[in-house]
Image 1 (cartoon, helix red, strand yellow):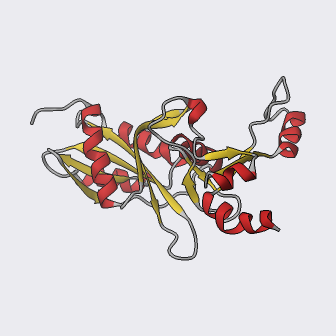
Image 2: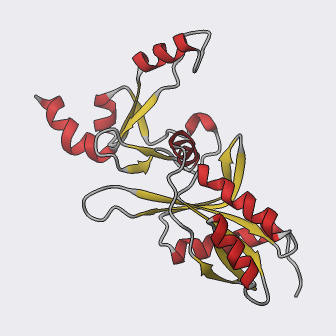
Image 3: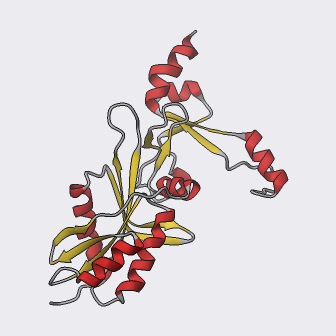
Amino acid sequence: MEIDPENSLYPIVEKWLKRHFLCFKTAINKGLKHSRIDVVGVRDIGGDLSGDIETIAIEVKRGMFPFATASGQTLGYNVYANRVYLADVRDKSFTPDEIHIASHLGIGLIQIRGNKCTEVLSSPFYNPIRKLNLGLLETLRLGQCQLCNSFFEIGNTKIKNKNNRYSNLSRENIKRALKNRKGIMFWNREVAVRKNKLGVRTTRDGTTFERRFICPDCMNYFISQLASE
């Protein structure tokens, strides 16, 4: 079987991820400064009573990488995501030893054969480091509403300019947000000052990075009634 470059396999896995897990958002080669994930997806799991989501990270290999090493790399993604998978090119399925290793480490397995992906072993559920998970989601242009806790589109993923990644938000301007039917972004300055004093997050000019979001639905159906009074 001819071995394809790993990056040529990403779209195959991404398409399968969207279909198999019903992900409403998928992306290729996303992450933070610590590492990047080959394929990532986000799906709704909250039912009718919450906006809970689940983040799925997939490491893609082309069938020639040492299995245990690839498995350990995959496991490292649980600092970002709720479920982690290793997708590997195989003519035949994974061996019993490989499945045993994956089960012991706690990762899921996906077999890639041609243009077809098959889930061989499910990933357990992890509680990732919150700030890393939220940071990853922000690279996908998703933010969490401070009122309803649902995740929503804060910007357009097609816009490459980082300054425009909040294109679906108004900056601390309620009237403009309501007029344009957008969400709103504001900054928690008290937390920023506290972190600055402790040296957790220091800035020279008083700039704050403590950004918070409110979704368009909460703005239009809740905040608008308060603003009109």
